[in-house]
Structure formats: C-alpha cells, structure tokens
Image (cartoon, rainbow, N blue to C red; front, side, top):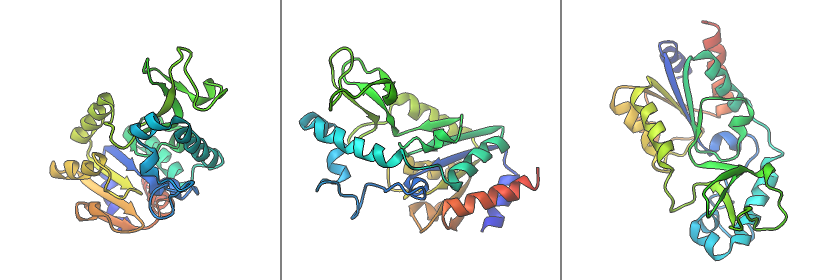
Length: 243
C-alpha cells in the first residue's frame, strides 16, 4: 500500500494534508474523549461547549489549563516532522489540522489552517479579538480582557460553527488540490469528515493513514493501516530518493 501511495505522490503537483487527534496521540497527548477522557468526573463533551462556559467559566478554564499543562511537555513526533518535510517537497502544499495543541506550528509549517482553533490562543467574548495566551498574564481564572469581558479559549466548541473565512479557505483547497493525505482522524467529526469524499468525487486521489479502518477507508484510493509516525516518514524517505 505504501508503494501505491508513493506512486500517486510522485505524480502529484499539489498536496493537501488533513490531520486529526491520532497524530498528536503519538506525542503522548490523550484524545480527551471516549472512555478514558474523564477529568474530575466531566466528559470533554460536557465542558467544550458555549453553554458550559456560560454556566461555569472557571471549571472550563481549569480544564483547559490542565490540558495545556500536558501539552506543553509534549514534542512534535516523527509524523509531525514528516508533514513539515512534505511542505518542503511540494511547492503547492497545505495542511488542515483538526488538532488544537499547536504541535504542527512548532515544526515550522507555514501553510496551515487550524480549523478547530488553538489552545494557546484566547478570544475576548465582547470584542472578539484574539491574543496568544503568553501575552495575557493569568492573574485570575477565568481571565479577563483589558475591556473587562471574559476571555475564552479560541477553539471551536461543540455546537459552534467553524469561522466562515476558514471554511472558505478550506473549500478552495478541496476544489483545486490534486491529492489528499488524511492522517490520524476518525472520520466522524464534521464538516472535516466530508472533505475526503468531496475531493474524491471530483477525481482527486485520497490516501488514508490510520491505525484502524474508518468511514474514510471506503472512500480512500489507498488506505494504509499504521501509525502516522511510522508510515509518513517512510513515504517521505521514498519520495526524497526520487527528487
């Protein structure tokens, strides 16, 4: 299967990559969902909502602080680094990540959409302006903007829509790029879960990399079962031999 993926990629002039939680999980970051996703008897789905923040912003903020405490000690893994190398190999490259941990950014990837936001960025609930968290000293939890309004994590919560400008950019990529690699995603979180089908329907190649089958497997041109930290570096090494 890797051979077929490499064959497709050798004939590709524009490459789009989509990543999900499976990529970051290989850096030791829990998915924060499912049977092991409890924090102080809360599920992520109970905390990552605008209603939870309105009801109890302090608890929501403490949960996000706990998550950042885990993430700050994590490092980009071989999968993250291989994606950065793909950007260097392709003049037309873009990454759409569903991950909010900022690990892709730490590899130096330039052409990227963090479609679900970033845990290290905050947004004013009144003025809608954003700041990096390091620029906002946490004197209190929940923190407040200079204007006095509460600050919230700049992420897309359950029940919220992805910002229009990000969706417009994503759809422009889906309409023009030749090949998609979708790595480490369950294929069940919409609208991103629909992106492989959209690309395949117009004739693009779809390469899936995951540790198990997903709904994307039935759409993919090539579906490779394995860890992204193992598969992506091997693909990159084979591509580099042909440069």
